[in-house]
Amino acid sequence: MLGRLFQRFSRKKIIEETDADTSDLQRCLSTFNLVAVGVGSTLGAGVYVLTGSVARNDAGPAIILSFTVAAFASMLAGLCYAEFGARVPKAGSAYIYSYVTVGELWGFVIGWNLVLEYIIGVSSVARAWSSNLDSLTGGVIANASRAAMPMNVPGFASYPDFLAVGLIMLVTLLLSIGMKVSSILMTVLTAVNIVVLIFCAVAGFIKADPTNWKLPGGPGRGNGGFMPYGFSKMMEGAASCFYAFVGFDTIACVGEEAKNPSKSIPRSIIITLVICLVAYVVVSAALTLMQPYYELDVGAPLPNAFIHVDMGWASKPVAVGSMCALVASVLGAAVGMPRIVFSMARDGLIFRVLATVSNKNRTPVVATILSGIFSAFMALIFDLNDLVNMMSIGTLMAYTLVACSVLLLRFRPDAVDETINEEQNKITVSKYFYTTKVAKSTKNSHKLTCNHFLISVVIMTLLSVLLVWGGENIMRWWGILLISVMVVLILLLGGVIARQPQSRRALLFKTPLVPSIPLLSIFINIYLMLKLPGATWIRFGVWMVVGGLMYFGYGMRHS
Image (cartoon, rainbow, N blue to C red):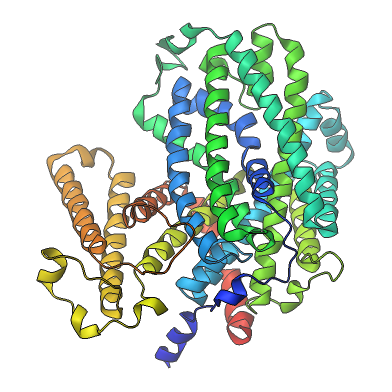
């Protein structure tokens, strides 16, 4: 009984080589279109809102280091995503990747969390867009709505946001028309956004005051200098900045609509992350050089910084750029969500009616419309401030399982490796520690890789727990010794994995430095997940209970 249940949970989706090139959706996106989708989804609220809060409360001018660290963590995940874009060019992103390599249950877990991530993403960014528009009118819209329809209920918004609902429904209509139209609009909005950011950077550096990076400490400003709150707070800022890079996942979501996914997905992911890193670092540097970090406005840092340097007229183009960027972010999140739903419905894990494709536009029309309605409902009545952290759990879990999948697939024998004689590659301690590596991957070598990988993940989890909750104990002699032992064990296990023969399957892109990059990515993701507040884990548990009812009540019997 348990054996059959485990077999059901571990069933893997099979994608043949011929299936990878076929699609129910329209293949119309070039590498340029994918980069526009990725940059538009990523370079949104982060650059216009996050820069102010992180610089003022966590990092000061060292926000450029926070963004660099976050970009490094995202690049590790991006490299793993890029290999899977070359292996599995199907709509569904991390859901498909996990289903193909880890199994059905974990694929469902990731897909279910990505749905939540995109729902919150669409709703919260639509709310941010509405608030931005309201600020341009001096708060007239919010005051009128609050007076006409007050909602004084804890956990809900203070008033229903019909502007956010209107934006979401408009975006849903555009996506229903076709992906080509949506990608053109996102390209235009992204171009406007980038032009505005270039203006902000150039004007900011013209008005830069280098002494703002050498300010003295004091109440509300830390110790002053470039890193006023210390290294630990700078890393906390990096954890916040990490979520400013998550939009590149949308590129993988629309992989089935790319003209040449095996080439364009890896290229567009890397290009997107590089563009966003440069934009974040340059704009945050200009921002902290224009105005002291402790005076930055948390809600609208760039317009207020220009007012601070007597360039109030510049707040107008900045407002235009922020509106375009937020619309592009809504569009990017709204693109990803129905495609996750479509993929899961096509596999039978959720109701199959959601996999209906329009004959005219070849878009997942039912999934698109229902996703838009659900997101609009969330934006209408919920105060999403407490739910924003929920985005990070789904994202970090997706990154973790993609890294796991890359590592396990790289060492799993493919058809080209099946001619090897298993006896010739029999596992011995001497062979894998002291002698040359064997030529081909085998079932035995893959089993050894899986065992060592599982042990290394357990140790990395324990190490993360110690680092997050160890407090001052990690600086005592036994804490340092324990951390050192764990690090050595992880390095030894990684070394054993690196000694194993890799699959000889030819790919257009391969993640470099395997297993080092996947293992490092997994460790960073586990550490960041443990940094999330307990309330986030409780809400995550509730969402997973609902998902469990869906999977065990419907998906397991219809997949």
